[in-house]
Amino acid sequence: MRFSDDPGLQPILFGLFLSMYLVTVLGNLLIILAVSSDSHLHTPMYFFLCNLSLADICFISTTVPKMIVDIQTHSKEIIYVGCLTQMSFLILFGCMDGMLLTVMAYDRFVAVCHPLHYSFIMNPRLCGLLVFLSFLVSLMDSQAHNFIALQIIHFKDVAISNFFCDPAQLLNLACFDTFINNIVMYFVGVISGSLPFSGICFSYYKIIFSILRIPSPGGRWKAFSTCGSHLVAVCLFYGTAIGVYLGSAVSHSSGNTAVASLMYTVVTPMLNPFIYSLRNKDMKRAMRRLHIRTL
Image (tube, rainbow, N blue to C red; front, side, top):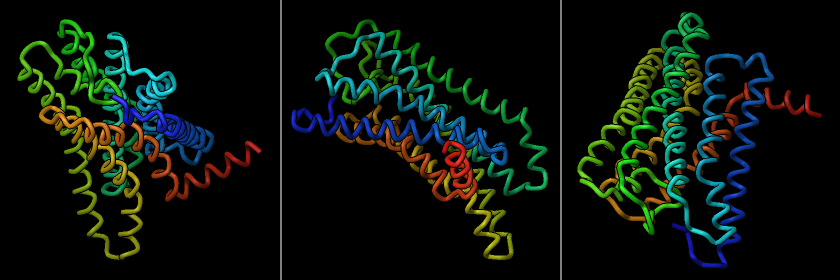
């Protein structure tokens, strides 16, 4: 589905989405380069941030380049294998985003609630294990969707009410009992969405409880400011992603689904570099050093 069939709007949409894609890729690459080049940022928090930036680049690359090409070529078609491939990678990197946000919440919980044991708890081995487990859960989620989609007999001349092969929309086209589809969708949604989100909520419950015990207002603000950027990213990503994923199982409003999907597949990865760098003094300092080295 296109955002608009008006020929006059196609050049505007092409320029808009191309600009958003380039800003996302360059912004996240800049974060990776800044963290890699500055030894002061070789900490668990920035290690997870680098992985999140890499996942964001891959996540937006599963949908936007295809959409840009379709706008330029005036095409709305995708082959069967291409659709399943796009769906698999979309779920893989989308779930990876959510899992990494959960891991980052745990990192902030340890930093605020157990500061004296932070270096011991968040050791390099545990950090690497958490990233590996995030990838493993994301891969299992992706393959579960792929297995269900492969049970569908044939796709030919069918319409998907979104600008990419949305998993929920795709599985609703199944030729067998959709009740089974909905059960599997909600189950996978709980495993890859609700449980990580619950972990984030529990982490912030403990963080807020610990912050309120700090006697000075300045100390409370300093402790909470380390979590502000992550909290904004969590609300932006999970608020739209869970709503689209679970809501599309019972709703068929293509306009609302496409706009909400745009938020978590394009806008969120684009905003993450700004969210994590504009209010972060360490990131600003690292980017200035990177700029000076480049010059």
